Amino acid sequence: MAKTKLELPPRTSTDVINLSDTVEFQWLFDGAAFMIMLKGNTREDIDVYIDANIEVIQSWPDNTKFFSFQNISYNNVGMTPYFKKRLDEAADTMLEKKLVGHSMVLISDTLLGRSLKIVVGWFSRKAPVQQHWFTDYDQALETLTNLVNED
Image (cartoon, rainbow, N blue to C red; front, side, top):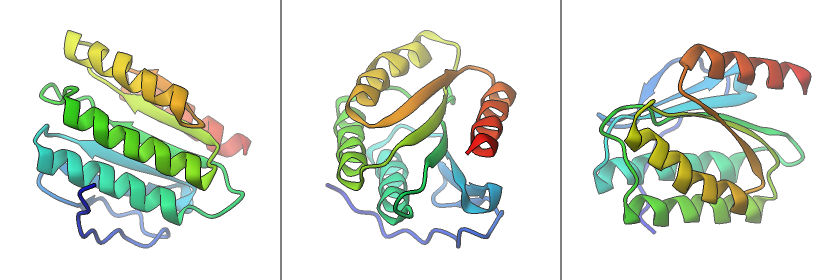
Protein backbone atom coordinates (compact mmCIF):
# COMPACT_ATOMS: atom_id res chain seq x y z
CA MET A 1 0.00 0.00 0.00
CA ALA A 2 1.93 3.03 1.24
CA LYS A 3 5.64 2.75 0.70
CA THR A 4 7.88 4.94 2.80
CA LYS A 5 11.42 5.48 1.53
CA LEU A 6 13.52 4.01 4.34
CA GLU A 7 17.23 3.77 4.95
CA LEU A 8 17.80 0.77 7.18
CA PRO A 9 21.28 0.37 8.61
CA PRO A 10 23.51 -2.54 7.56
CA ARG A 11 22.87 -5.76 9.50
CA THR A 12 26.24 -5.41 11.21
CA SER A 13 25.25 -2.07 12.80
CA THR A 14 24.13 -1.96 16.43
CA ASP A 15 23.06 1.69 16.34
CA VAL A 16 19.48 2.65 17.16
CA ILE A 17 18.16 4.42 14.07
CA ASN A 18 15.24 6.86 14.15
CA LEU A 19 13.25 6.03 11.02
CA SER A 20 10.86 8.83 12.03
CA ASP A 21 9.96 10.74 15.19
CA THR A 22 7.91 7.74 16.32
CA VAL A 23 9.69 4.67 14.91
CA GLU A 24 13.06 3.34 16.08
CA PHE A 25 14.97 0.43 14.52
CA GLN A 26 17.98 -1.61 15.64
CA TRP A 27 19.69 -4.81 14.51
CA LEU A 28 20.45 -7.27 17.32
CA PHE A 29 22.77 -10.29 17.62
CA ASP A 30 24.94 -9.40 14.61
CA GLY A 31 21.90 -9.07 12.35
CA ALA A 32 20.23 -12.33 13.42
CA ALA A 33 17.29 -10.33 14.81
CA PHE A 34 15.93 -6.80 14.84
CA MET A 35 14.00 -4.57 17.19
CA ILE A 36 11.47 -2.02 16.04
CA MET A 37 9.57 0.35 18.28
CA LEU A 38 6.36 2.19 17.40
CA LYS A 39 5.52 5.23 19.53
CA GLY A 40 2.66 6.78 17.54
CA ASN A 41 -0.63 5.85 15.98
CA THR A 42 -1.08 8.14 12.95
CA ARG A 43 -1.23 6.71 9.44
CA GLU A 44 2.27 8.08 8.81
CA ASP A 45 3.58 6.34 11.96
CA ILE A 46 1.97 3.06 10.95
CA ASP A 47 3.30 3.35 7.39
CA VAL A 48 6.89 3.81 8.55
CA TYR A 49 6.56 0.94 11.04
CA ILE A 50 4.97 -1.53 8.60
CA ASP A 51 7.12 -0.48 5.63
CA ALA A 52 10.27 -1.07 7.71
CA ASN A 53 9.00 -4.50 8.74
CA ILE A 54 8.17 -5.38 5.13
CA GLU A 55 11.58 -4.20 3.94
CA VAL A 56 13.30 -6.41 6.53
CA ILE A 57 11.06 -9.38 5.68
CA GLN A 58 11.75 -9.04 1.95
CA SER A 59 15.51 -8.86 2.51
CA TRP A 60 15.66 -11.65 5.11
CA PRO A 61 18.14 -14.35 4.01
CA ASP A 62 16.53 -17.49 2.60
CA ASN A 63 16.50 -20.57 4.82
CA THR A 64 17.32 -18.47 7.90
CA LYS A 65 15.06 -18.28 10.94
CA PHE A 66 13.36 -14.92 11.38
CA PHE A 67 13.63 -13.17 14.76
CA SER A 68 12.08 -9.84 15.67
CA PHE A 69 11.22 -7.75 18.70
CA GLN A 70 8.13 -5.63 18.03
CA ASN A 71 7.75 -2.97 20.73
CA ILE A 72 4.23 -1.57 20.48
CA SER A 73 3.93 -0.90 24.21
CA TYR A 74 3.45 2.86 24.12
CA ASN A 75 0.10 3.84 25.61
CA ASN A 76 -1.01 5.81 22.56
CA VAL A 77 -0.51 2.86 20.17
CA GLY A 78 -3.79 1.12 19.45
CA MET A 79 -5.47 -0.94 16.78
CA THR A 80 -7.20 0.92 13.99
CA PRO A 81 -8.72 -0.42 10.78
CA TYR A 82 -5.76 1.09 8.92
CA PHE A 83 -3.22 -0.58 11.23
CA LYS A 84 -4.97 -3.94 10.77
CA LYS A 85 -4.96 -3.50 6.98
CA ARG A 86 -1.23 -2.76 6.99
CA LEU A 87 -0.55 -5.74 9.32
CA ASP A 88 -2.29 -7.92 6.75
CA GLU A 89 0.21 -6.69 4.15
CA ALA A 90 3.12 -7.66 6.41
CA ALA A 91 1.58 -11.10 7.00
CA ASP A 92 1.13 -11.62 3.25
CA THR A 93 4.79 -10.67 2.71
CA MET A 94 5.86 -13.23 5.34
CA LEU A 95 3.81 -15.91 3.61
CA GLU A 96 5.29 -15.03 0.21
CA LYS A 97 8.81 -15.14 1.67
CA LYS A 98 7.98 -18.42 3.50
CA LEU A 99 9.54 -17.15 6.71
CA VAL A 100 9.56 -19.20 9.88
CA GLY A 101 10.76 -18.02 13.23
CA HIS A 102 9.74 -16.00 16.25
CA SER A 103 8.56 -12.51 17.03
CA MET A 104 8.51 -11.01 20.52
CA VAL A 105 5.61 -8.56 20.82
CA LEU A 106 5.81 -6.13 23.71
CA ILE A 107 2.48 -4.51 24.59
CA SER A 108 1.32 -2.29 27.43
CA ASP A 109 -0.56 -3.90 30.29
CA THR A 110 -3.68 -1.87 29.54
CA LEU A 111 -7.01 -2.42 27.82
CA LEU A 112 -5.50 -0.85 24.69
CA GLY A 113 -2.54 -3.22 24.85
CA ARG A 114 -4.78 -6.24 25.29
CA SER A 115 -6.90 -5.12 22.32
CA LEU A 116 -3.71 -5.08 20.23
CA LYS A 117 -3.03 -8.66 21.32
CA ILE A 118 -6.47 -9.78 20.14
CA VAL A 119 -6.13 -8.25 16.67
CA VAL A 120 -2.43 -8.97 16.18
CA GLY A 121 -3.13 -12.48 17.48
CA TRP A 122 -5.37 -12.90 14.44
CA PHE A 123 -2.45 -11.74 12.31
CA SER A 124 -0.25 -14.43 13.85
CA ARG A 125 -2.65 -17.15 12.66
CA LYS A 126 -2.10 -15.88 9.12
CA ALA A 127 1.69 -15.39 9.34
CA PRO A 128 4.07 -18.34 9.74
CA VAL A 129 6.11 -16.63 12.48
CA GLN A 130 5.26 -17.59 16.06
CA GLN A 131 4.21 -14.64 18.24
CA HIS A 132 5.35 -14.42 21.89
CA TRP A 133 3.47 -11.81 23.97
CA PHE A 134 4.96 -9.78 26.81
CA THR A 135 4.22 -6.80 29.00
CA ASP A 136 7.76 -6.87 30.45
CA TYR A 137 10.65 -5.65 28.26
CA ASP A 138 13.36 -7.67 30.03
CA GLN A 139 11.40 -10.93 29.74
CA ALA A 140 10.83 -10.32 26.03
CA LEU A 141 14.50 -9.62 25.41
CA GLU A 142 15.59 -12.65 27.45
CA THR A 143 13.24 -14.93 25.50
CA LEU A 144 14.49 -13.53 22.19
CA THR A 145 18.11 -14.01 23.32
CA ASN A 146 17.42 -17.65 24.27
CA LEU A 147 15.64 -18.38 20.97
CA VAL A 148 18.40 -16.83 18.86
CA ASN A 149 21.05 -18.75 20.81
CA GLU A 150 19.14 -22.04 20.35
CA ASP A 151 19.15 -21.63 16.59
